Image (cartoon, rainbow, N blue to C red):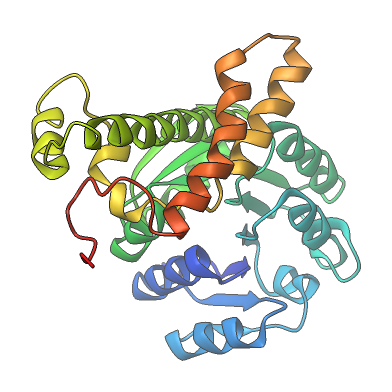
Length: 279
């Protein structure tokens, strides 16, 4: 059976890896991006290119959005030359951008005007997992939409969990990222405190990974950059305000990730793995 043509808007760091795995799995792929270099890289992998998101929607009935921010996801869907200008009835628009849950719901309302559905499908585990095809996809949506998306996402995901309705995929991703940054900030502070005693941090890390101090952040410390941490925590704050909850730890982490990013990018973060070159 011929596989359906996949569209992808935003073949950047994550999207390009997804394109590579989709093509390897036999899916024809059409991409578009504002960055001509990104389109060229996708074409090198075997993808077709389109001038606009509307053209992608005309060529594909399953379109993945892989842009960086909420306003970009909304713009490529309902803005000028957006997906809605070319979306075919019965299409699925899969949102693999990390956006606020309310944004995913808004996108669902938009595409339903064309008798189509949103698959809320954020992805976890980062760029290295995207390269390996071992992402975790968190699905929110109707069961029939989820089942249609499952073989597509299996091309680049080793795990897929259907967590609920549209919006719930983004809730799951936000909670995952919130806990990641809580652990990341804690490792900044624990590392600085441990260093003050003269202990060998890599040896301490080895011990912690055998005990209750273990975390994904500790395992992946060298690959954590805090680049998207503030955006993630801003989404958490929006959800907190909407729910009317007082979550003081959440508020503190939102501010602390700014300094964590500075320390990481400047090479001043605790060297938990011992891989940083010594002066």
